[in-house]
Length: 326
Image (cartoon, rainbow, N blue to C red; front, side, top):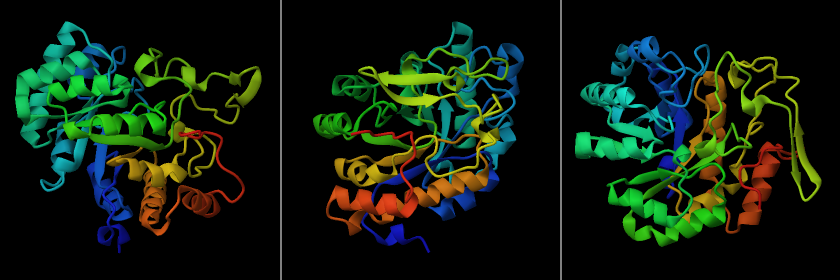
């Protein structure tokens, strides 16, 4: 039984999904919404992976669906919970022509939600399809202040994903300053925290080249070494899904102990990163986030809640990659 259904907790869990058959399992674990990449053969055959359709140039792993019939397998009652990612920062003229037909075909299937990073494409979607499409502003769009939110609200946007680097105090400020716009907000909570800001990252994430986020690095602040990474254990360049490290909650990015505060400031959805991950790993993440959401109303203070989360998940210490460092 999912306890959250009987509690006054409105925050949703947004989960990656790899194929339609996973959806019942993900729902049972506690997820409410599901996002995926869909890259048809027509795109691959003309652009290969030089221009990313949804922010994933990898052809071997973390790829997404490539067959329209797979999209059609989603139950009609679930299609309003499916979100298609179109996370490229920009496209050329020919690609925009392709995208118009691409989105029209998806709309015919009954899926109308699209996560989009490119500002021009967002404008064109509203021009081409009007209210038929529901556009969610991607975290890679780089919206860092309330004035930017207002610009998107003028286009009829009702939902926005905060970039990974947004701290909670700034989120709260933006939510308060835009509450009259009735915007829904989504925040990252697990996995794939990166040193770099997605909106300004022009590195390739492909099979042929080592990804920039996998290069050895040292994080220094005021001449103090904060963190070192060399990824010696990660033998595969293809995907974090093929790493030799055993999956652990939050080991590549964690914000579990901040769920109490995120829900209190008005975050509507918590995003779990993990396109292409093993289903059992995604389920593990969903259950962890769902548990933390269930426990929100049981604690009056944030510190009590943080103490509970750390005892429950990290008795030997928190992971190194904290999404929301105070």
